Length: 338
Image (cartoon, rainbow, N blue to C red; front, side, top):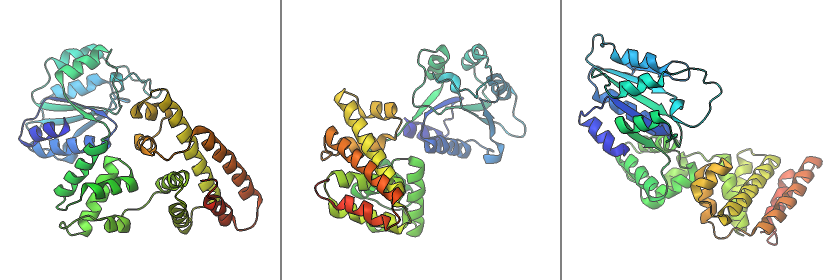
C-alpha cells in the first residue's frame, strides 16, 4: 500500500487526507518527506504540526480550512491520533470534537493536505470515526515487514542508494540489526556512503561497519548454546567480553532469553501465531520468529533446568572475588548442559 501511494504522490496526485497507522516510524517519515517534495512551495519549515494529545482536532480543522498565506497549499501533520485506537492514554486529557471531524472528512479543505498519524498496530474498528477515516482518507499501514517482504525492502533500499545486496546478505544484516526499518535504513545508507554510492554490500562490510548490540549478541549466544554449538557459543561470549560486557549482566540476559523461550513454546502449544505471541509477551516479533524457526531448542523441562543452573551461576558470580569470566565460560563449555 505504501509503495502505490508513494508513486501517486511522486506523480503529483496529492490527496486531501492521509491516515498513517502502525509502528514503523520510517514509513511515517518517508511519506511526509515525499509529500514535502511533491507539494509546491513546501519545505520542512513550512509544515504545520499538531500533537493531538495536546491540541483539539477542531484546531487542526480550523487551520486546514484557513486559506494559505504566500503559498497555494498547506501540509498539516496531526500526530498521536489516539482517538482512533482502543488504547486509553492517561496523559491524553484533550477532548476532541469527533462529530465535527466526521462531518469535515466528507468535505475536506481543497487547499490543505492533512496527515493523521496513529502510531498503533491496530485501530479500534468498532468506532464510527475509525470507520469514517478508513473510508474517506488514503490509508498507509506502517507495520513491520517480515520474511521475504523485509529482504525485498532491504534490496530496494540498497538500490535507491546506488548499491547492491543479495537476499542472503540482507538476511545477515537483519540478524545483526533486527527488523526496524529506521535502523536498517540508517545502516544501508552508511554502508552505501562508505562504498561511494556504487558496488555491493557484503557480509564482510556488514561485519566491519554495522555495530552489534549486546542484546542481539546475547540472543545469538543463547540460541547457539541451547542448540549445542559450543564453539560458536564461546566465540560470541569472548566477543562480548572484549566489548566490555560483564558476566553477571550476561548471565541475567541469558536467563531472560531462556525464560522467553519457555513462554514462546508454551504459547505455541496453545495455537498462538507469531504476532499473537509477540503481542502477548510484549517482545519484538523478530525475536519470536527466530525462536519459532529454531528446531534445536530443548523441551520445557530442559530449559527450566538451565534456568536453575543459571541461578546458581548468578549466585556464584556475585559471591566470588576470583576470575568471574571463567565461571560463566565453564558453564557454557559444558556439553552435558548444552
